[in-house]
Length: 130
Image 1 (cartoon, helix red, strand yellow):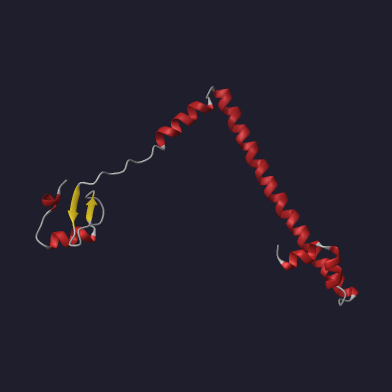
Image 2: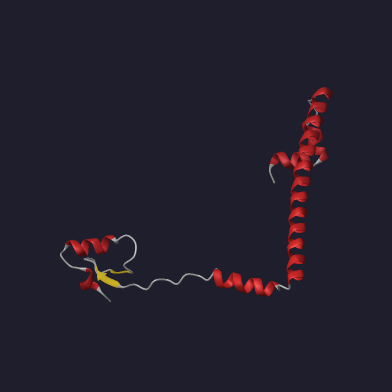
């Protein structure tokens, strides 16, 4: 917890810090804090209203699904088919660089530097097929 927050949340600490302030300065601080609290309440009310609206829309969709005879499992089954993860492409080419490190490449995308160096030596893709 920050020192500022410790002071604000403890009455005796706050009283000690406010000893040198005049009444008008304290009233100004209270006024500013009241505005901040009111703004925060409005923000929280707006978030809560948006969440309530979202829940009402979800309930309306659920009711429409029930009326149409669509089960949630049916819907989830369709989503699972659409969002299937992509398979990783298996490497098609393999080379060993001058340092003895083995590099593999699927043949898709940019040509890796190790393969570019291999091709610049006069070799072809066919020479490094797996």
